[in-house]
Length: 362
Image (cartoon, rainbow, N blue to C red):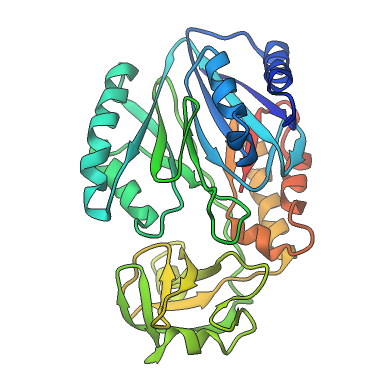
């Protein structure tokens, strides 16, 4: 059995005060048991001022996580904040690690040694892997997931991409025991008496943007042509691309892959992201692409986002024996809320059962 607690701080001017606030909130919620781990999510500013390093050094358990643009925990929702979820147990085991790879081809080899070291320290078969991946245009996120699927076959993997609020994503950092990385994954292995459950909130696909088509030329994660037309002029037909760049306010463009085809087999669509255009007018995306697949632009109405979020939380609330809830919402949902970017988090904080420790981050 796991006991969980969630803490938060906005304190950026006084690191000692931030540590005291977190410790006080932890002491009020639970005593630490034999095995403990911390999951940290914070604005990059907490890394820059040294708060993350100090917090990890002063708390008596390993900590891993990533940066985010907005979070909610313990009923508190905000942007320039740090949240920490503590999981503690006598019969569940935890181990953290980090792995840096120089290329797509080296991800699996680089992940092997730190994974094996963490698995040795875990002392049990991993039943869940929490994976925090860097924002790296050279290595699509699926390569990290594939590597851990090979290292630990059958273990479910859940996690998020490190993000920030800067146009060039310069401060997207993963965190492991106080160290922060722009080019490495951090991870948590969980074993023992744990039975994770997973829920996904799918948006309504009825009101998709009309700027999609069939991918007719692609290489890796570079989208070259749609319907035989170069990517840039194709997307410039919309108001979402201006002068060869994403329109102001857009950090990336969500792409929905093979929605109709996958729906026929009962599978959820794949969500990719258009990050930028290169000098050839090709679109650089988050994940690898295939030819002869359909894409659609995924900008949605706020009522769709809030409605699906509420429906998912109501499902969670109906579950029995929930010790903790961790939710990662896609930043495209936040973008689609325009001038109310925290509205989804406020809704979740209001609807989640009050006695359930939770952490939500974009």
